[in-house]
Length: 146
Length: 146
DNA sequence: TTTAAAAAAGATACAGATGTCCTTAATGGG
DNA sequence: CCCATTAAGGACATCTGTATCTTTTTTAAA
Ligand code: FES
Ligand code: FES
View 1 (cartoon, rainbow over the protein chains, first blue to last red):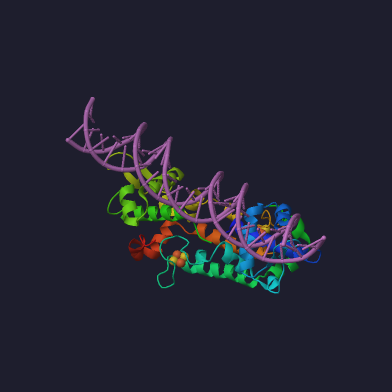
View 2: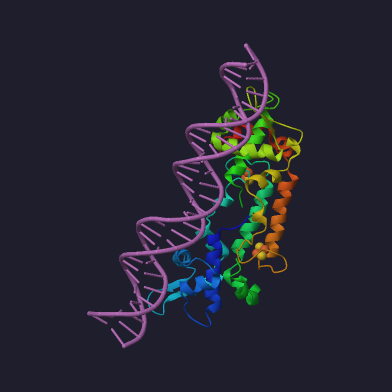
């Protein structure tokens, strides 16, 4: 019913880089962690994976940091979810009564399956860019609140 | 998107006791654990909480074990969920962008909230008894599959 | 009352997610 | 080339859910 903390770190990290992109082309993990009140080194690890997935770019060295690329804004939340949480959650019986499948469904399977499809939809249809458009103003104030 | 393993243990434990209730008034944790392929001692701890919540009854000593009571069949899944998983999951922003509330919603809040209500509905409307009715035959075979 | 059976309770162990620290590699500027 | 800066990578620490083991308490039967 809720994503991992790692997911939140990754998402907010990407959003922060995006929001800063007009002011500075690259943002250091140090700054991101500080502004979002997130553990610095742990965030670094996660951002690394986000880069490997292609959602962000990064360069080492002076004036380096994390930056947007052509894929960033169009990336669906699902691509971050894969990194941080994986998709097992969608294939496990909610009741943990058995392997979840339609051929041998548990009593709740159909209801749950419909619900999960809806979640999947939300996470695959919604992109980083969508979030920015919908919430432009309040994001920056809100990013550090959790 | 999925309940804890503990939830599965608790639910399957209760279901097993219910299914056995016409053959034997009390069932020992030893037997339950064996039949469900669940860690014996850990299951004991969870069953204890289920009893404390009032969903099952138990008696110590010879011929003791866990047994149904007047509340068992009408207990909603939500009462087990409270024991094993708690309700925090329903009050946390999926995106972990901020405290989840309607007055300061994240961009996905409304969609997510509707979805969560649906989950809550399922777990509060569905009782132990409902599961048994819907799935009477295949439960016993299936109970040990996870 | 004694004994054995079974749940309850407590102590400890393990595993995965989370978090910290230190070292290594890459990069731009001098 | 040399140096400072920054991400990447690896080793270790902590915390929480899960799991195991032992001891205590309760109960039924003999
Ligand atoms: S079989 Fe239970 S949710 Fe699919
Ligand atoms: S504020 Fe994000 S789900 Fe409610």
